[in-house]
Image (spheres, rainbow over the protein chains, first blue to last red):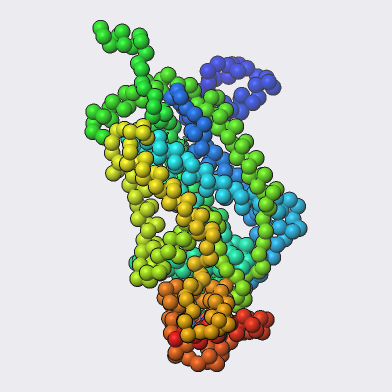
Length: 253
Length: 245
Ligand code: HEM
């Protein structure tokens, strides 16, 4: 008896030949999610002519963020946010004993600098190309939030090794926050988890660094990229739009 | 941009876009090459410079001049310059960055001209170059000066050469010990939770200062370890403080 037709099914695939198993899985998922139009929309949208290497800086920032996420997960497998000595000991273990530990820590540490450089370069490209103007104002605003959050990552991550450098630099940093007008004292109390720089300060910084801010960055990158695809990437500002000749002929009629 | 300019832009953009190429594979190819370069640079830096670890954090040891990561140097430099005007320190530390951030946020709203070519946007060009130059300069000078934790007071002229030397050495110990996180000395430091130390020498005799450092009232940390481990530094610290008349 022939199988009844399923919704979304184009033609009869027969009895699942093995060569089409992959396709079938994709179809199975697509039948339930209808994702493929979205993916097609994202991948096959057109980018204007004249796109150059400066346009890769945004995706390079994204890639640096992903690299931070991956190396960060590996560090989190060993790291303990324990101010009594566990934190320092776990970092020492990662650096000296764990297999490739120093390499992964080095990638995370230098990756942070690379990401900051890339985000500033990307911002400079957007600025000098006037790409923040109508209709991309909101993309720019989300970008500024991403910039601030990326700097927050740098600040909160700096304390985590809990060595002398981390400790004293962070005390200074938190106190700088404390000098701010109005919200300053509340902000530094929030960061310290109380009036004193103590044991809970470290776990608070850790939670901010590996859950709160990366989650927010991930979500905002999603919004940023949605807007980029929806509005289209700007053409280089020096290009003049020349209508296709046949369009001109039509419009003159 | 008024409505006509907006529509004009959208029209021109849709022409340029329709003459373009699909994102996949053309833009994706470039992006992937760039991603390879990024990961290679990160791996290269990790292999060349690794990640070091400083001595364990110790709130009572006093031999560390804190430095932030390089991308905060500019902020520390702003702080160092502005702290010479103590009334404006909050302005410098939070105010200046906040104002810059607000200016950045609102950029699309006060720069409303339809022009996008940078050579025809003289104000934007000048502002952009000035910002980049200022950031580079502040980062550079932040990298080359002491931490904002250090004190820069001139030794009183009444001091002999060796006393002045001790004064300088004591300043350094104060910087390393993080006293300024809680105390103001001269133009430097945070006002609170500790009292201002600018004239501490005329309030407390040097023995009293030394015993405060050994047995302070919390939250001030004890510097007993410093006295035990490097008596000379402790001496310089007390000597410096008692010269603050
Ligand atoms: C985590 C940080 C960021 C990521 C991952 C990211 C990613 C991207 C990507 C992939 C694009 C596509 C075009 C391109 O690559 O140039 C883009 C465009 C854009 N970005 Fe970002 N971005 C980030 C931060 C920022 C910042 C800090 C700003 C500015 C304050 C910004 C403003 C913009 C604008 C206005 C566009 C549209 C440009 C155009 O259409 O030509 N982004 N972003």
